[in-house]
Length: 122
Length: 110
Image (spheres, each protein chain N blue to C red):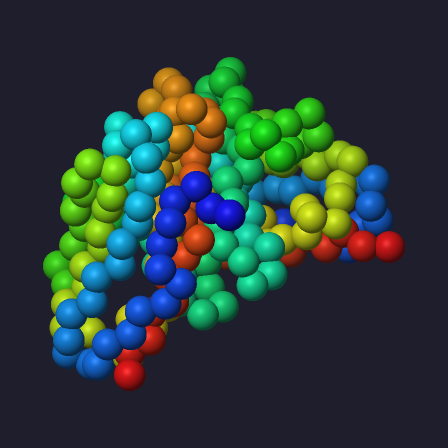
C-alpha cells in the first residue's frame, strides 16, 4: 500500500523559510516522479512543483519559481520542499503526491499524503 | 481565477445521476489527458479518473469520465450520501508548462 506522510509545516513569519518532508513507502520510490500541491484554506488545489524519479528534472509553478526548491533523497525514500521568502499567500495545506509524468508534463496525481499546514503570518 | 472552469456546485437526490463539467482550451484539455479527484470533507484528494476515462483499481464503475474537444465531464450514477465531496478536474497546460486544476465543484446529495 502506498503511504505518503508529510511533515515540517508550521507557523513562520513573512520572509522566513521552512522545509517540508514527505516520507514515502509501499512502492519503489526512485521509479516515480513526485509533486507538491497546495490548498489554501477554503480554496481549490494549486500545483506547486514536480520532480522526476531520478531527481534530475524539476518543474515549478510561476508563483513559487525562484523561492521554492524541490528535491528528493532516493536512498531515504523522502521528498522535500525548501520554501524561502515566504509570503502570506503561501499559507496552505501542502500535499505531496506520487504522480504519472512524461518528460515534459504531469499526467495525473495517483496518490496523496494527508498534508501539512503552513501558515505564514507575523 | 482557475484555468479550468467548473460549476461551483451541483446537487441531486440519492440514486440519481449527476454530471460535472470542466471547460478549458486547446492548450490544456484540448491536447492533454484529463484526470478527476474527489476530496471528502477534511481529507486529502483521491484520484477517481485518469487519462480522460480510466478508473484506478478500487474506484467503482458508478464513476465515469469523458472528454470532447476542450471540455471534460465526470459522471456519477447511483448517488450515495457518501459521495458528498468536492470534485476537481486537472490536466497539463502546455502554454503555461504547469499542471492546472479546476476551481472545484461541491456535490450535495439531497
